[in-house]
Length: 331
Image (cartoon, rainbow, N blue to C red):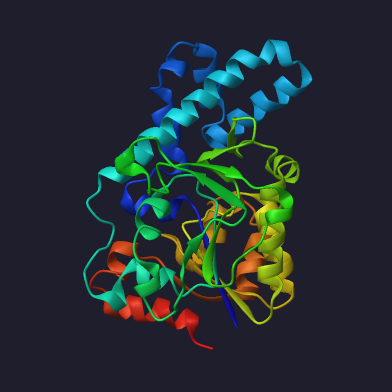
């Protein structure tokens, strides 16, 4: 049985990372936004629906139609987003440790080693800074030789003190003929790129906004990652644990939906628990005519469990909840 993990912003939130609503509030205070009232108005316009990524999508569309008129605003918002990731990553690196207690069987790192692959929509460097810097080869029951970012090459930081740090390095894609997964190393696949990844031309490899599927298709390494994601979930029997994901990316939902039709089972860790899909459905509000969404049907068909507790509880002292989560791995 294949056991896979998909992470969203709610995962990093356990260590202080920002959710989309908090990112909106951060961006309002960025110099790039303060200097351009039009950008602030655009963020407010999309606050309730889509957040800053919807604002970015509008600018991307305008720029594609008229590159000259839309370039300044697009560059400004993108610079503010990069600033946000730099500040968030810097805060992660100031944390003295990410474990919630010292019993090896109850550590987050031990839990992560149990997955055949980790897929993440997050573009921060939390995993790189804490998880891969631990000795994965000696952690947990699954004996990996280490972790890997398949198809990517690490360019070490210039400061000798940080030469071995994955989080402080810059990562660039290998040539397509070198895209492969080493079975001895646990693969971590960042489906939307990362804040410390760059294209061969030096531009940041961050997939955001309203044309993610198209941009992924035009980026060889991410297009390959998307195919690996499809293949992994299509392996039967397969299970996918989803932590902190809001199911707001259509291309990801479509991949999961097709896999559910083939028998994929899900376990969700989110504050809404099994009610996640219903909470995301605007027609479930009082006084409205309820119309079920495809996501509701998907979860009803595939869900084999859920947890509403934060990871601090699950991997801290809440033994009952920890045991419930670990049932995911039972054949």
